Amino acid sequence: MKLLEGKTAVITGAARGIGKAIAIKLAEHGANVAITDLQYDDAAKEVEKQLQDMGVKAKAYASDASKYDETQELIDEIQKEFGSIDVLVNNAGITQDTLMMRMTEQQWDTVISVNLKSVFNFTKAAQKYMLKQRSGSIVNMSSVVGVSGNAGQANYSASKAGIIGFTKSVAKEVGSRNIRCNAIAPGFIITEMTGKLPEDVKKSWEQQIPLRRGGTPEDVANTTLFLASELSSYVSGQVVNVCGAMNT
Image (tube, rainbow, N blue to C red; front, side, top):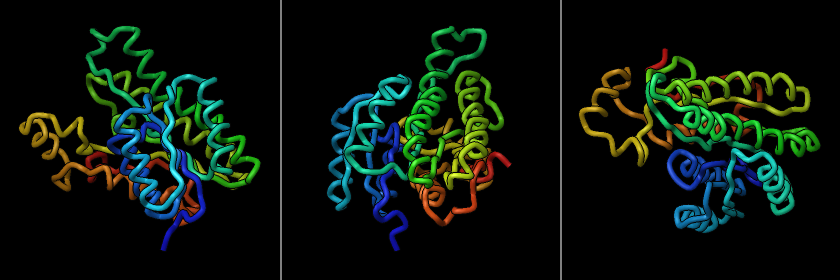
């Protein structure tokens, strides 16, 4: 059974990693997919073609998610191209980790802008179309460090904690229009970036996880599918930890 047949999903930061896995998973369930990334590069083109080969309508867009006006114009373009925006997955994010004593103002501002302001930008832009059609599901990518904090990640943790407060507020604002808003808080997920960590560091992380393994992008994608579809029709304003019980 395809859970998103005829729906349109917009996924930010989807040229690789978790965003790419989400795009593929939603397409597998019939969604037409618009993906964004900072550049329309080879990685974005590859995902675009992979989605199109699955028989759904798909298009990749270059987008700086932290830019307000650029985001409003992009969402208008996607609405015109696809005809609706039914699912929004705010996945774009970066890290610039360092201890507070060494953190620069630029490192703080950049992470907050890309990780948190982008969620405001895309939600603000997509909301007007969801309000008109009186339906929609918004899924925001937070993190377990947004729930519990982490040394050396004050900027990243603050941005991801902000997403949680934003998610809960939006859910209360738009619930009467049949629009749901939830957050996912992934734990240690094995991606290209984390896969390059030394083996001893990865094993140290895994020992902190009750399931004794890192998660996969597919683990996060499966949870996103649940929140995007009608399987979660009475779930809104929630934070789902996908962390192998690390944050329990």
